[in-house]
Length: 112
Length: 117
Image (cartoon, rainbow over all chains, first blue to last red; front, side, top):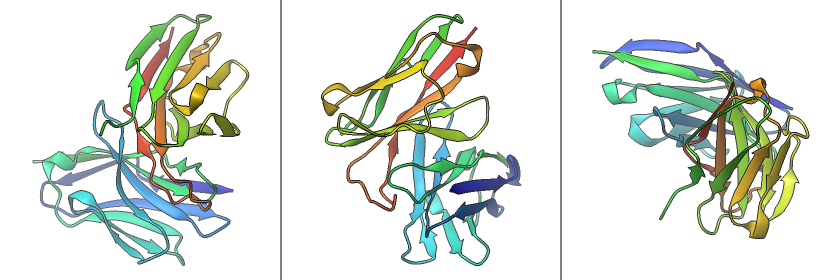
């Protein structure tokens, strides 16, 4: 069985501030972990994924995430928020062929 | 190269009616997935096709939902008869190669927003 918990359904930061979106997972086997972003009226876009190589994963748009097995976490960060980062972000885990399990999503608001 | 496309983008129907959603995956992608997000909750897996075969349909909520993928190309998801709780956003995704551990990248379509009144 696998599950994902995203802490905080809404996160608000000021432009230029650090972005931290939290994700904790549960998986019975070594997981693959993903972060997706969804802009209004668009589909899910892959930001980055962890596939058991380096624990620090760099993605698009300046985002990165660190896999911490001891904490079962895969938090998403960006050093400096931009207005265009405002969107909904989803963490997902996949440890069976194909099927992904998603968190509830976190809406990021960026204030000018 | 075109991405995953879904039709229609929005659908409003009355309880008891039938709705058919369509998904066109990226050309050459053997794997096709359907997911659903109901009213701001998590995105939930519905089923997975490998070519024209149903690999995993463990997430299908009940027998009012019927998914097909004739010829292993596009897929349809029919809801008949629709109920109020079927409202939500239906996403389709496709991937090329299946990693047995689940690490392949899935490409998502924009979703179909279904509202059942």
